[in-house]
Length: 132
Image (tube, rainbow, N blue to C red; front, side):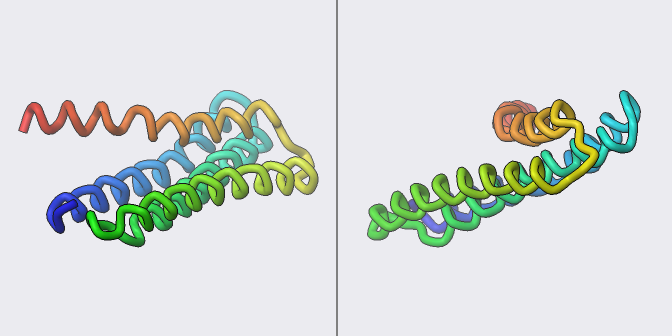
């Protein structure tokens, strides 16, 4: 992987992390507008868990790059995925056991909203690149 494409990949990852961070208050505001403050807090917590897990994965994945470090890159991606999974599981366990009152539906909706940005953002980037 060339230095230029590595920088582009990092910029895209940083943009996705930023976009997901922007979705945390949006998830809370949507839940508050639809239901109440309990739903808003629950949605924000679900969104935060997803964002923290994705931040860890992005950090772990982009620690090394290059053709010579291909095995290390793959190892870092596997570590990132395992860490992401662990953060999500532990986060949900902590929230579900300690936060009272809680709206489980809003919690998972906030998580899904932020996760959906991982699926939607690449299409937006491709669309913007076609225009520009």
